[in-house]
Length: 485
Image (cartoon, rainbow, N blue to C red):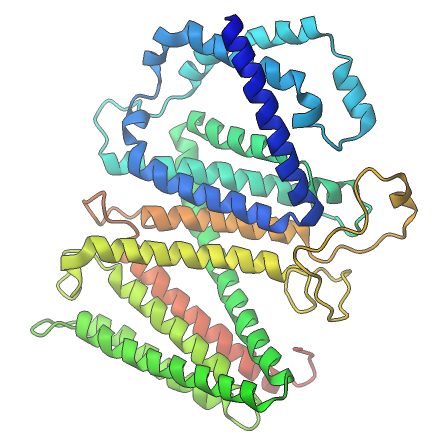
């Protein structure tokens, strides 16, 4: 026991010091990429749980853990006790001194007496965590889907709670501004605890979250489209503002490459998803609409009254072709018009990776663009001078300085609430990606994001993208009295 105590003390001390130094560096620069890191970690965890957690979930309730109850509870008490001894480093580094003093005033004996209650923790979890309570055997696909949804729910609750906490934050003197940017050890602990606790909620809660995730994912897809439009317009404007011939040539090259890629990709779609000898009218309709939309984008953008640019139109055309491909590749394996059915596993994995990559890029872009003068994340009270704040710039006011309160209140550069809402919606969407929108069309647990639900969600996303882009072009003509800048 003494050796275990020394080992726990050394590990807790080293871990807390390392984490404190690393996470304090994050808080001094920017919290945005750290939130992206948490979201990326949830994606990796969801994927791993889907692949490997089925045997464990089948054993919940965990009756078998009673055999190691004594040793496990002793380890929990030791580790928790040593972390508490290092609480000034682990959790409360940089916190309000009065709070730290109150916590240090708690008698050690009383703290150890409270920690002894951990011996009841395993009994409580054994009774509360009940997933496999069915009278019949559920397929492995059900446990895979359930694991993904539970991790997603924990991640969603983390960002949803922060979104609610940040409502009404208008200036940087608000105490909640420090909560948003600092306290990363406490945040990671809360994030982990929420994910673990989600494996103890009843299955009916997961079923309700599954339904809500479908609506939340639809909202995220719309946000993703808006981000793409914002990205293409800013990319085009930044090169035009340089007013140099080399950048004009670069715009022309990007435009030509994008349109050639769109039409070449569409030709491949005709080959892959319109096999000879089969009536594939639906697939032909999807592909033909994609080509028509590409021409429509160029015609509308080049119209003299629209005053648009063909480069954003070409980028949107490529994205629509990509959405058409992901939609068609998600058709069930036994569908005769799916010409890639022989490579269904590879196609499913590639589509999943592309979907997760675009999701990560969307949340990273939302973090990078937060605070710029044109992003939709900026609240009305934020500065709109057009000067972009550096993502990793040092804070002018450090937490804990007594003279920080004397500085005039500066408005926040972006909406913290909407920032966390985007991450919460992205958590829902990632669950739908990994579960194929909870579609049971595929009998193989190796196929992900496959089924008619996925097909229609993605093709509707393509049409919504086209509609929003066309709207950005024609809205100034339809409503000339309104400012769309």
